[in-house]
Image (cartoon, rainbow over all chains, first blue to last red):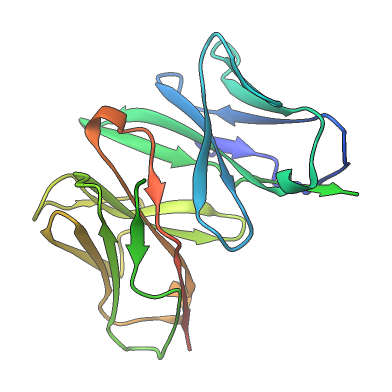
Length: 112
Length: 113
């Protein structure tokens, strides 16, 4: 089983739609969780952190469910500019170092 | 604003050539990382470094080596390039207070013929 699993998509949604992605992780001792965004042929950039209490940044809401070991990202009122690949990132302690594991990413295409 | 730069955006090399990929960050970050990214496999860690002259193997170090002679520079070396090393290579850096947030360079697309 992969450490971090995501549905690669693509998710094709119309402008204005609400779309949600899930990501599951296998290590119950994982410590921190993030969503990164990667535009086509560009580098990944941090979108938002994910906290147990959930967090919201404008149209984006991230949530963590430790019991079921998954995190989610909800995008409301999708814009064309939201088209990108969304990477789930999980960190854990490994041999005294902070291990960062990336999912393969979920591709979102917002269509007019 | 953090800046991570990589020496080349696109590179074409022949099998057996020695390849150097350079990464420089300007924010005095202690931690630096090299990843490769392939379709369906995501980002995989090749090597990382938490200090000058220090290096640690990541998940897929075979066929690669690294050098960190100065804090701001982390080099990835392919001793003898092979076609299965054709990939997108991404460098990243961060510093311990924010050890979980990584700042990436623009990437180098390497094609090995």
